[in-house]
Length: 148
Image (cartoon, rainbow, N blue to C red; front, side, top):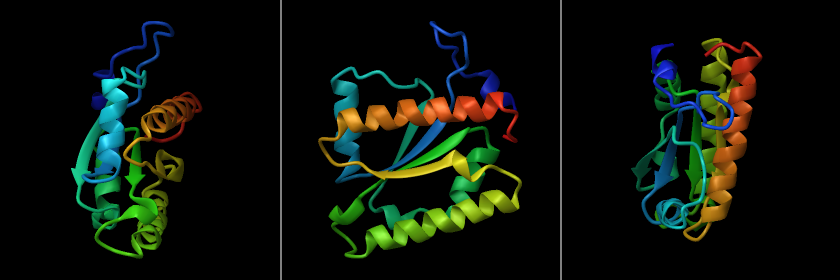
């Protein structure tokens, strides 16, 4: 996969950093992700963020497309129960994740390439932790020979 070849190797391990696409929300998770950067918290340089108004706006096909285009994983930084738009956003987001995991399986891709967690506006440390643990899991998938 050509996109992985452009990933920057970690200076300590020499292993290419996984490319992770993060779907974030404008009002809730974006400030927490921004705070992680402001606080200079370490996480993969392969993380890219797309902001949306609400987690429930994500389409399972976007997740499949991202992985098919070279992202090793997709992380949904969910609003959780704090969504300003929909009172049942968390339930809708869970259904989106289930549908996306089924779509990944149908395309012979590991459902472990998708994760979701609620990230609040002050959850900088938690976001960095999620990115680091997800990155480690994606590297393990890569070295185990899982399909990309």
